[in-house]
Image 1: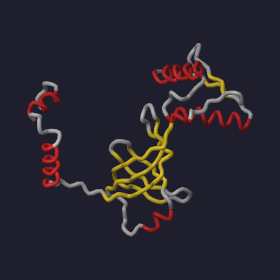
Image 2: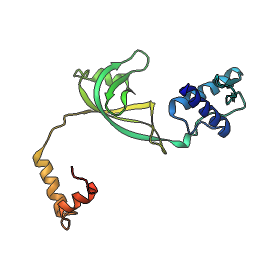
Image 3: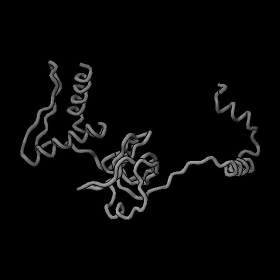
Image 4: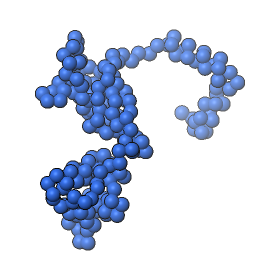
Length: 192
């Protein structure tokens, strides 16, 4: 019942605003798909729930339930994770399992995949990709991801590198700061 009530609220807001820009990407795409069908096939849809006095949204040739393109901007991303699948018959891609985004399907040129000399399956890599990102919410349009570069990901602890960064910071912006006082201030009085 909770999902029905939630969807009823969504339908009511879509009907009131006559916009799908505020919806999360999968829901907005569902409304857009129905709008495309309504225009192409001359159909009319009424969306409502099974609740009494449910909100209703009508989608037909005259409605315009499409996302505003200006809200989605082209962006560059770096993803790190384990490659679980490569290739594809129609649209080639790399499937990457990440901690932050789950499984990502990154569209990749077949020619690039045929030139790979090493087996990348079940190994951890970084992938640089381009795609669309919502300018207000930061949401990623997962269907727009295009492969740019494979990054050999070998995280390692380098004590010399970290010490050189500390020395550089000490000489520049930390020279007049007591590190212990600064750390206490950053923690907000909490001891870790």
